[in-house]
Length: 333
Image (cartoon, rainbow, N blue to C red; front, side):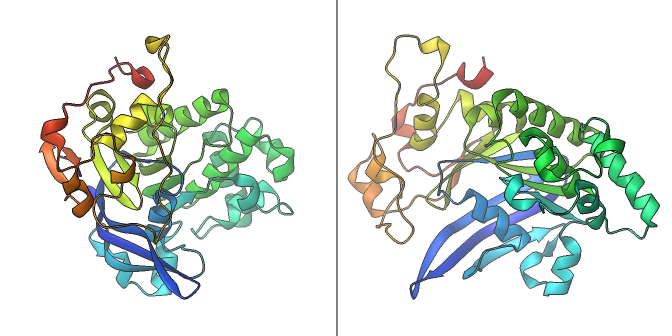
């Protein structure tokens, strides 16, 4: 069994808004193994990005982790001082953000942004050579010529590759990828997915991959956590999630995926909208939208329990539901 590189236990994150404290991540627990790509999926506003930012300590103003443990190689990141945490960012844990044009500096060359992220003691020439090597590693053509280019001179896919090169500059052991393929067309998405798979094989890097695209998650991830309203509803190996979903929310997401195998069927959608933080009532947060909801679901929040080997779900009625399987969703047959 591979060793855990990250172990998140009962994470709770809150934001102070208009004098009120709103919980956006609530009792989230999961682990990432060495060399594993762990996916987090769910609708917008489910807490995926906040979970990643909580791990690396990059929450926006008025955001704060108020509970739980974030164990990286056995060290609780919550207990580290700011300077100690700054040493871990980049060198041990890197992050790729969703939109490269808002992250890359438009007036600084791509090459300089990569060299500035290198933490090792090197000469200027050595850093430049390292930057060229990283650009070549992530598939940027003619890196010797493009090292002095600016972000606006790169296409969307090339900018995302540049972001990955910056994140890899100090050789992190864990990479947090926050929806890195969202703004890209399907062809470029495939290239980025292929690149991330290659990086895992070449340097053995672990990864948390955040996305709302189930097709992307199915191609890339080893295990997947499904989030809703700040909580994890289900965790299982990727194949198991797609072939045998055990939570009504996951089941609904599977049914909403267009498929050539369900030709002629009306496209399914989950009725209603995700709850706004602070508006949750007692009981399961998904109960107002759940087709299988009963009175007990409105009164209590089920624990995340292991229903089969490595397959955890947060549903008190799982044994009664008998949910169908979707063996041909997103390429799984």
